[in-house]
Length: 337
Image 1: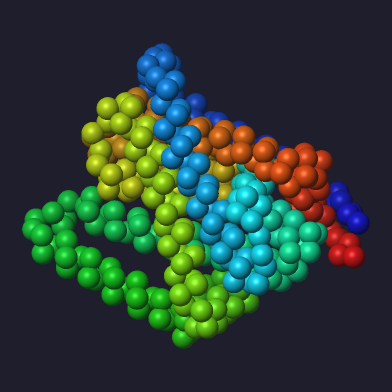
Image 2 (image 1 turned 180 degrees about the horizontal axis):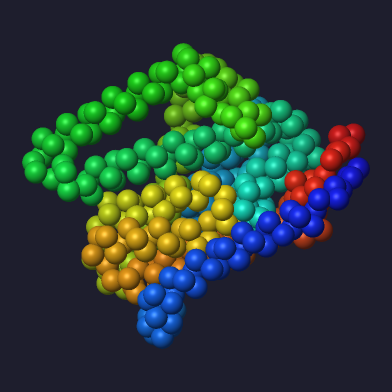
């Protein structure tokens, strides 16, 4: 059973402050752009653009479900695609509640309560999702940076050389991770120390089942490619002349800034970073902000809508969801019986 700490009011104040911080960043950028110009730009959007946006972003969530089902399969747990996708969606819904990555805890607790995996195995699976996500984002971001960077456009060989160097560094890092996981465990300090065992587990899994891990990583890459296509679809609507590589550069680097949980789901931080990057690529500040707000707003709202359907599919309801996120909002003890 649950026992709630007395410090919930203080935590609530922190959560409120983080939400206000995100809103404040948006208001500040909007004031720079001009509220009238922003509203006019939004009004110019054809509602029919929602059709391709929904189609493309839905595919992204399907790949998230495929990835999670694959991870469960590695742990010898059978699951349908719809159930795996639903678990990922309720985890994402929890991430909208507070800035911390609460979704991982909700995911682990759900798997424990339903008998899918115990806490240790569930935590490892949640860690795997984060790890392959981070790897996919960083690898794609580095490759897109090479193509966007003005330093390597002098010749074709410049691209080839830069690519070979990047591949060498990635392979070297991967080998170090597999054969010297202790080096990476030491990087996890503070609250992240609890995941050190997962680093060793992941290194061992790569040794035993390298093809399985590569498959999971490939699915993560597909997730982000379709997220990039979602933004690219929106840019085409506004007739913004950015290539797919430049779009990837903007989207991925904006996503990296969401790693630090300053605001709920990176609201404000994501948009601010995207505005800076797109204006640097020659897009007007007004269009950059409008695209950033619509892109992030659409993804968040559509994900929440899918999450509501996921709650229904898992027969949780909002009451069940509240119980999943309640432990991390002040629980001192969980009855594991």
